[in-house]
Image 1 (cartoon, rainbow, N blue to C red):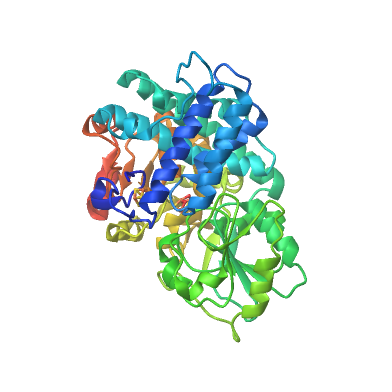
Image 2 (image 1 turned 60 degrees about the horizontal axis):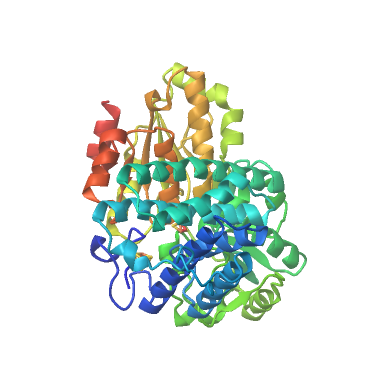
Length: 527
Ligand code: FS2
Ligand code: SF4
């Protein structure tokens, strides 16, 4: 196997043994490569043949399936590959049996990519991992009935590019194009989420699990949460979010359900410890799923593209009865179970998406003008297991008392229960939402730049990002496409960025790897 798509890759260079650091076996990794190769063949077959809505869905679903911590199930991967082949045969009937075969639409052999020139491999990996991340966002939009033809078309183009012999310059253009199209995709998802569930409002979320039956729901899919809330109404079962589902509490159309009680646990990498003997079932709607431990293997359920061998999968009918029955069978805790965040806080706050932050824009602008707010930090991104990730907690703790910290995605669990007080009624930590809500941060930054009649890069705003999986890749590419400079990135740099590609990123965008909170803060504040 060869895989180096995520931050925890073995030896900071690539997972090559029988099993990856994430727990993905060599066989699963090879099947994911086969699936990607088949998707490239399908994308190319659509170059001169008419694709359909179904083809779009297969492409998006296939790409999402290969994102880290989504699918560990060889059976579903094999079915997915079959589905791609069937679609190609439908789109281009007889192509495989053609007498003057051009091989153009054959499945692409991913080894060609992994063994290509270091810089070409690096640029193509940025494209591939970027569109894998973007596919997750497109998928969530699709589930809510939102899609965009430019976004959908681009998946075909980008997949085809991976198999072409192109110069570094041409590939770099496509790399930035991923960022551009992903901005559209995040905007689409933002619209889908707010149209369906309203504009998020600041919400205090308890971390205590009340006595009685409960279900924990993890991942990013708000539609699944809504369906689960509906199906558990009046059943005496409480619902708790986990991981990236936390921002759901801010949406009016979700928070109206009184049995949506609070949040369970912290970021994804702590799940094997936190779910140990848990007294309720856990439903995974997307990543990040880790290999399931025996002490809770009878209570893990998956849905959508998430899949793990032998776990019950909730199919397209979205009948959550098995999850509900498991909650009733386990019965929950006998007394309220008081849990805390990583820093001992008893609740966390969410719901500071662009709609809310911009509604108090006058206050924010006034705060900057009168010197009450000295700086904004966007400390956001994925969490992970690496020890160096304490950097982000320490960084936030050391930020000046008159600065505001905007945050998003699961990395915030390192500090979102800290009580950092507020500045004139504005909380110092504002959780903007899931990773896709990076769109909110972009909207706020752009609005501030307009208000101060300057460029985003001239604002007293610094981005200190943490990455783990491929959604972080497409978000980073969006920030680069927007010309945002001086980003601090950690905890380590991606293994798939070659020294020459890194040089391009440093020369053009001044990306810096994180060092220590003290040193980075000094650099940022003395700029
Ligand atoms: Fe965290 Fe995992 Fe959000 Fe990532 S829960 S690392 O998938 O997408 O962020
Ligand atoms: Fe390794 Fe990450 Fe790939 Fe898993 S997803 S095999 S940990 S590089």
